[in-house]
Image (tube, rainbow, N blue to C red; front, side):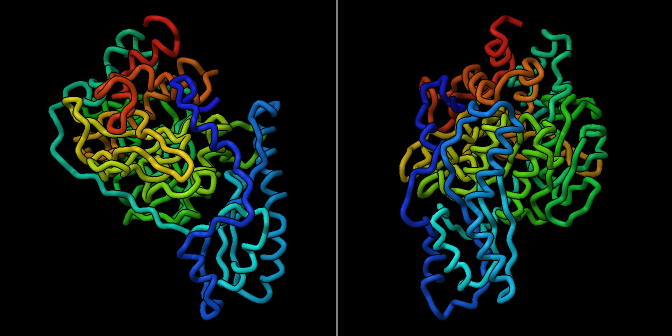
Length: 453
């Protein structure tokens, strides 16, 4: 079963296994360099993905057993490449990072070594080490707010709190955030961060030198210190990975490192310390080729099989069609569009469809308030930003409430009930502007629990 099964979108099942291929899919820009003898000494960093044998999560006795299966698969399929790189290390400066999540490797080496590497029959694709950049959200004056921000009111959070007497607040649910970090000392976020890892500078104390990550965290789990509630799930626990620099850029190899860390923070498959979901208010680039050869799509696929719900911002490049960025464009990513206080689709919100070489997807799956959203920023302050970055944490926060309400629910089930409970804003059913519609906390919880609240 995949995230979209209950809505009849079974096309995503084609992504589970990589089809056999005679030669690796090499990015054209890299192929030109590799085919030029004059470029042999040129150092480059590439992301290499490997072929996976078909594996179903149900084949394994536990989550830990499935993770060990992923690790064994990576060891076997990467063995030949690893041997080559270790032998060549004496001759050239070679650095590599191996990833069992998604079965890939980041390799920095001269073009002459990469040219040998791609002869490995286990390799599925070779891509440049892409740079992702945050689209800085627009700062705007917020709508008037009293006890709740308009976004919380719009998704019917006050009504849900009243019906449940405040017992649904995300308590005990771990939520991952990959972003610019977090000001964990902000009055609305104190005590929320249980793990922090810095993939940029290696600092051990939580910090945010950009504002973006703290704003996202506030919408997920912020309190009401200012008198206005800003967070959907103020009782949730946050696992935060800083993957973006102060200027808002991130290398793909660091992103893959962080995604793998999120899947197993303590490095022990037998302890399930991973978050139930990860909120990702970032992305870039366009779908092309086969998604089974995309490094971040392979990582997203593994997240889902490990029970982690992948929530991704659709992007801020609307209103044109075919503007949903990666990894939101991946088949198993829950892509989030943005709405405003009047339930209109924000002009900036990226639209579908997503067109891969072997599959066309309606995207986004869901929408949420993302225009003029008031939330926390470092230094105990508050600002109002607009972007699908602001819509995504609304969805992540609601998913946390749903995991609290039904701790045994699978990530696919949570995604299905989020979509099933959404308020349809366009043509009946899913469309390429708002997906299944704007999230509704009351409806989705009732569908999840199969009873009225």
